[in-house]
Length: 356
Image (cartoon, rainbow, N blue to C red; front, side):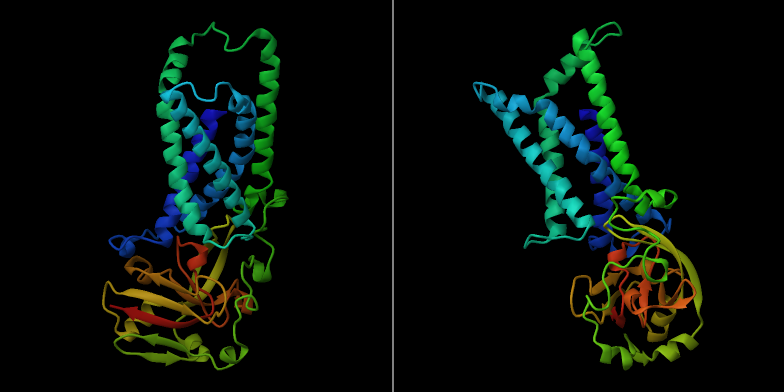
């Protein structure tokens, strides 16, 4: 169980690292973020949430098998034993906090005053560090275990073998069941089994789930009626929605994938962002800022580097699945780009700014 749990932790950490780099890239990487494959973020974030969810029953079972060691006497038998217990305390506390914070994030429940993303990011590094320290402290015991193993050697007394097998079967069934009834939010062939997933990929207006409605984002109705897109660059200009709809329209079949784990492919139609930028005289390599009308909630502003801004599949979308965007999906216009976190696919776009 420890080995499987370690693999899940590493998978969750690696996919989480990729998600963080897409959301907050370092300056030297911001213009070269990958836009292909278009389903890349859908796959990695789906794996991130699925592996984190699967780790919960496995982590609880692992702790149940070792909890009697918490009460050994004397509590500390020397420096090495003290380091071992300290590493275990940090490892257990961090692992429990990390997976349960992640679980609450999937349902968008934040009963704490601090930023989930920054704390989740810091805890991930602390968890990996504690795991490496634990492995270093336990290295002699691990080495001795593998050297002592042979095909004919029993690891447990014969009387304990049935209990061990029953435990492993039960834990395997629990991990499989939790995964099967939640992974359908991103693995659409299993969408009918999404009993525990907070989002069903097919439920929502225009065939897509909605994380934040127009009402929740406090979109001013008056600004929707008088809406104009302002493109601020060397040659600043404004367009009404009717004027936008008269420009050359392009279609793209792209997934939208949110950090909570759900994703769905949809058909988008609108104006290429690079066409709007060329009209404004934006120089090559310029960073682009997208500003939303929203008055409440995070991610009202996002930035795009060169790779996203000039990609032919990056659209200022006006239509979704053949219909005009609904208010909850970002009417009058929203951003959609390939291989980009859903939180950064800005809705209710009001301004496009060319940054130096």
